[in-house]
Image (cartoon, rainbow, N blue to C red; front, side, top):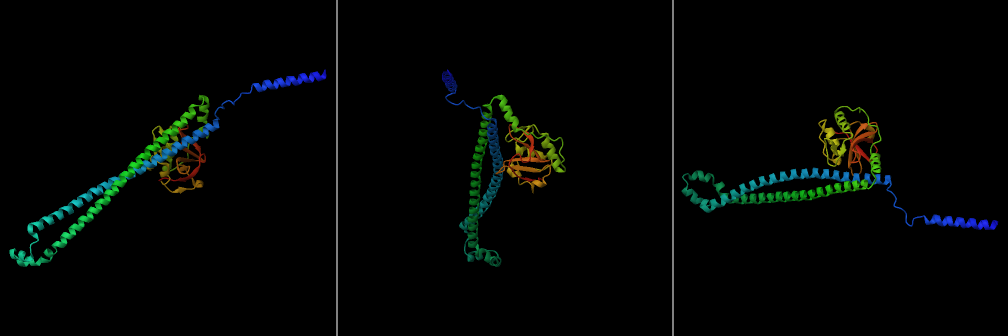
Length: 329
């Protein structure tokens, strides 16, 4: 009997095991996207888009410089054209005078002159007529060569502008593509999860009610802090939306300090400041190459236009890869 019970028990256990195996799916179910992974990918895409946007700002600054240079070259070329025309006219007049008989013999000139003595006094000038012609022709060649140099420089700047314009278009496409990819990634999540991702990207640091800034920095800090909660839009510089360098540019403009709309260019806007010497109002920079900028507000915090998911917010000084700081003005 005991032996029979053992056999029955074994049989039951075997059937249970078979039943359990029968309920195991043949292929593993598709795992839901991990929120941390999605957040990291969205962060990366937003930063890649911002880096492209900052390169776009740099290219626009370079383009403006090239166009100013081109305008100067064209003005210089016009002046050179005028100088060349003057020399060309002098050469033409000299040739015409010679053809009309100005080059007759010195003896003939003395004979026909009403004052042979006065003519003999200017004989040295008349005898150098051929030298004058040679000088005019030499001047003509020199001015012609100078004009050609200016034309080549103008053509080179024109080509640079065309190449940079193409680069601008490519960088703009990169910004749009990265932003679209981030939006698609977020749209694949359920609405509740998407809100969790976006919320997790915001600052958990309490926004200070006041920042002890002084001098010209005070106006810059006050303006930036007043924008907390505003939207982040690539290329924007106010009134209700900003990108990182657009916010810092507008903030310091309140103090009469002109900054370029570019984080990397703003890195050259003042003396470098050590992290231990930071004061409210200092510009702080991130990533290598530099592609993000914020404003230090004290107590190890910054205010910055973060990204499209966060907007203008307060964050920790070392919440991103820190590069350095400068003090504008």
